[in-house]
Image 1 (cartoon, rainbow, N blue to C red):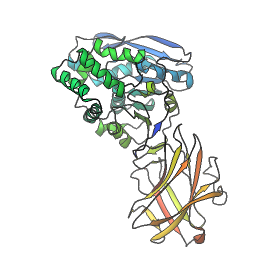
Image 2: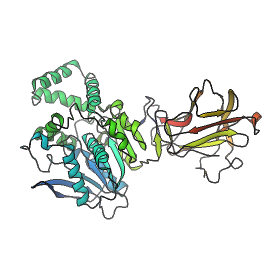
Image 3: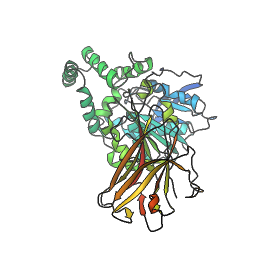
Length: 480
């Protein structure tokens, strides 16, 4: 007798796997949270620069590891990420933000050559900040956009032992995939806006007022859908116009953020439990961030509805997802399974009980799937066309797998199907259920009552985390 623990939603089926809420989040913390700012000396060679930081909450008294936030750009400053500081009041997590060197209130270095600006430079600055706050041994990391690029490179290159959890928000795995997605999004704009963008980019006149107006329309659709932009967002965007040194050097220089950078082949080195985020109207479309999902073992993917590149601005309460994050599930191209191999077994006196917990709000439809590929080697079956019965059990309580038995299992209250399992043709079945947030759904796979003898029925498979073969899983999505 066994069971699978908590499941989370899965968006890989091209369904709208979104957290739905249409209210906007203020661009400053709505709660009274202590905020401290200052600068940290950052030494490179014989030069000393200053990194500006801002801490929400109190690191010393927080019960959770502090969350370090890496802003995007590069070069647009931390201000647009300020709403994430609300976490300090909601989860006893101190939140640390900073302006990366070359932007905001940190040291600007417009005279530095292109090869000065490297990913290793920004990693060194991050490490310097961790040392300054004495949090090297325990911290969480949230990177947004370019900040997620920096976070991923930091994990791959440094393998930080103190990093507990990683959040990659609205990110890319390769510049090439990002560029294709941006082109796709631009085609969704009117032809005159597209032509304005093309003409000025080809002419190198991106500071022209006409180009800026066209770019504002692009951003209003795919960067931040709250109009007009909140002050903090507008301030961050303005930083590129004030000083574009960093973004030009990182895009066109050796790092090649514009068209060369690609971390795909190194993603498997990210072994930290990871939360992956993107949005419905994001220019970091599914195919841009999917390599992280496919190659990180412990990962959850959340996609926001009615939101673009800044869901923490567009959505009313994105921190619920961040704060409730759990990295215990293995997300796959089929669904969500536990991270260990589990036996699914049905024979006389033995059945398999599975439980799933509905997660997040606004996703009121759950769908149970059983998928057994044709001619799988991962299946033991007593005869070519063996039936198993699928029941929903009458319980909403989490079952203890150490004490659960065939005789003490919860009683069935609804028979869902008699599923024919054919070793030659496989079996595919699904059924929808309405479900509410945090609801426990419990199911049993058993031999038909007429075959409840030791030799009358035997169906067994090992549900592996990778590669997945025969599986049972749950997905969850919004219908509105």
